[in-house]
Length: 229
Image (cartoon, rainbow, N blue to C red; front, side):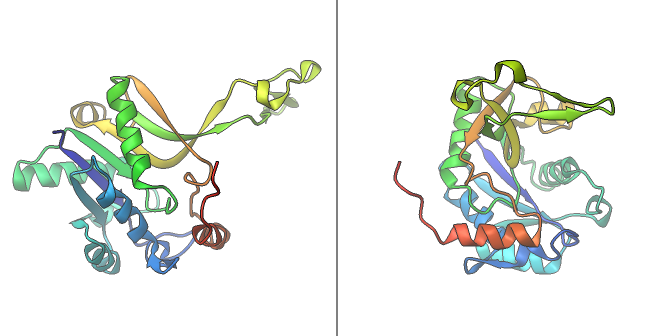
């Protein structure tokens, strides 16, 4: 059986939506939804929250997660999330000699994902013999860019506009789930490396909370059951 560690980074100093990790959404603190996803996964064997904040620690422990204290230097506005991942792995290895086979890196800002999404992402990594996997949402959007010399299309020819259903799908990274092999991560110190696989989520499951508007919108979705396909 694989040893799979879920790491959930959650610092206290969020700016776009202050204290968002502990704000109540659908009756539970935001971070508790992600902790629940990890605990209910059939593949995850251990769940750890990395935080610098005392309230987030209390909420996380109450929701059933372990907590690793993150140093303030790794919890600034500009600190990359990889710093939190590396710190958790190093701390657990030093204190327990613990090294998981896989790491599942979960953003606390994805409250509508499901435990099955986590299992699905791990399945993609194993099935494709990938080194790392990220969750994405499929897109059939017509994309443009503006490089200062005028706008130009990125993925279609306006003179031969295709029907959306005929377009080859592209994929938007949604930040919900990352899975990677621990040994490879320790070498690259990056969540995506080697052979990369994609786990495609529904648009609903991939929604992110970054602003007050996002929070209100997602809370309205949280109370609405999925329609049968």
